[in-house]
Structure formats: C-alpha cells, structure tokens
Length: 439
Image 1 (cartoon, rainbow, N blue to C red):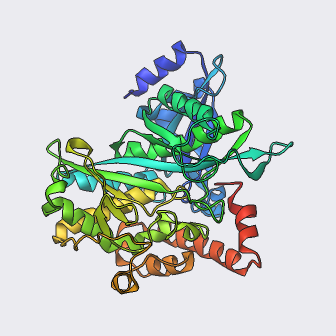
Image 2 (image 1 turned 90 degrees about the vertical axis):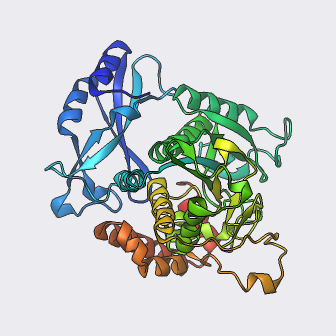
C-alpha cells in the first residue's frame, strides 16, 4: 500500500506502534537497521536519522562518517513476528549526505536510476524472484548445525517433507506484509525449499527479496531451525539459486507476450544485452567463493546460452503466455545484493535495445550431456570469484553504471575476501565457518 508521511504518522498513532525500524542494506546486500521511537519518526522524515557510516561495509571512512537515513513512506510494513502489543514497523530508507544529496553508495538508489532510465526509454521492468533456501536443525545451544531438517526431495509431501508447516507460516507472514506468495514447495535437496512471490516493479521486487530473507530466517528461528541462503551449503546436493524472471512493459503491454513466435525486436535485443554483459555482472550476481561451487551442477547454468523451457540454460523462456511471458535468468544466487544485480541486468538489457543487438540462436540441448564440440563453441561463466572480479574490474560497462567510489570499495572488499578464502587450507571448512552462519 502507498502511504504519505502524514498517513504514516496517523497509522503509528492509531495502531499501537512502539518501535520503528529504519532499514537499509550495505554494499554487499546485508540488511541493517536503526530502531527509533514513534516520537522521532516525523523528525526522521524531515531531517533524516544519522548513523556511523564508517562502520558499514563499503560506505564511508572514519574521518568523514556521518550519513542520514530518510524513511521511504511507501515501504511501511508491520513485522508480524514481533509482539502485537507495542507493535514494530519497518521502512526501507534512502541514504543521504548531511547536505541531503544522495549517497552514491546507496545501492537502492542505483536501482532507482536503472528504473528511471528504463522509464525514459518507455519501458517498465517487472521482476519476479524465485528463491531457494535450506532449513537445518540447530544444536542444544540454538546454533546452526549441518543436519538438514528432512530428507525430502522435489515436490515431496509429508512425512518426507517436514518443512511444509514452516513454509506455510512463512507464506502467511509474507501475505500479512502485503507480499503475495504464488507457490511453495520442497526442492531437490534435503531440507531445501522454494517460495515464489508475485512479480512487481524492479524496486519493489528488490525490497521484497530483502524482506523475504528476513522473514524466512525469523520464522525458521521461531521453529527452532536455521535457514541458510548459502549458494552451496551441502557439497553433493542441489545448490540454492535466485532465479530472476523479468518482463518489459511498453504502454502497459508485456512486449515478451509473443515470444513463443520468436524473440525478435526489443525482447530479443534485451536478452542479447544481458547475454553480452553477464560475464561483467557475475562478480555481483555470484559474489562469494561458494557461489562457484553451485554453477554447472543440479540445473545451475555454466554456459552463456538461452533456449525455450530448458532448465540447463543460463536464460530460458518459460512456457507461459500473455502477461506472464518472460525471460528467466538462472545464474544469480541469494547471497547477492539484489539492488545491484537488478540494476545491472536492466542496464545490460537496455543497452542491448539501444545497440540493436541480435540474439544468437537458441541452444536446444541438455547442457549437462551436450558434446564437447557444442560446449567448446560457447563462452562459460567464470570458474571462481577471482576470475569474475578480474572481468568486472576491466569492464567499461560496470564502470559506466556504478559510481567510482562504490565500485572501488566493492572490488576491494571482494578481493580481500577472495584472498582470505584462497589462502585457507580447508575451503570447505572456511565456507562452513565464514559463510554458512551468516548468509
């Protein structure tokens, strides 16, 4: 629901709201927040709420560290898992300098600029995220274990699927927050799940994905479980992807709707643009060393190809019709910052339209059984994070889209991360210690 500042203040007064969370993401997509009391909300709307930006990954240096959070009133959500007496609400915020100019490291604003460019070209980007995650048991101290909650498989039901009540609670919580789940089911891995929610405009889709992750983790913890969005938490089982479904509206009509008759014109050019820049984007869509253990296995893509319906491809066109027709990008994973990734994908696709790029022929093969002759004619996604970072650091496209300071800080953080990982004697142990408890 869309609110104005005045409507929000009235809502707070009339609905026993006692705590207000001002939320934002760091450069890596990790959600942060400050809680304020109701009497401080109007001041936050008018003058912002300051915080120490030197303590946030990829933000400011200590010698000049003040930034301000300005709540976006249209993002108001009541947090249903918090107490119903003395309720808690949350806003996503715009981040600004003391002079109220935009902070260039605000990745939510970077996505806003991509949306603005699309609008100026006459398009509206609609995105639906399909996100997989694992549920693990916790030990006697409530710490995450590496024991999956069940041994179910794809679309299994109870008693093999022990996760169904947790998924139900997650879906009902999302619904209470105005995020509409469309389907939920057990995925291929033991304890692995997927919940898909209704598509929306790109900014709302990114906000919803951040909200989704926090809801999943909160409900899992309430049930004595641990939810992991790590791309490959179990080495020999299916990885967890973030499949990005994207369609373009022009004059209110989905221009992908006739894709079953051939992807010519703007839809094909948009997809060609994404294929042209996906190597540049991979350091952001697959941002941790563990991301690369997932690619090329269990229906996760490895090669730069597209096809209709085929789940072994990087981009597939699902068997849908009318307003539901779309492209599905299958390489990203849930450890990414969705604001950055959605922005880069949109810009890449719009570049494809502006340049009139031609979509290559579909590769109608199972990429996991295709011959070496076929695969040798295709480019592959990076083998590891180091290779992805090298490509991004040399990318004119990335330098054009991301502010210089933001890109420099992101690359520095990720290069240091790769060095620590690469120097570790036990990569699996490093993943378990560093990434598993946090993602």
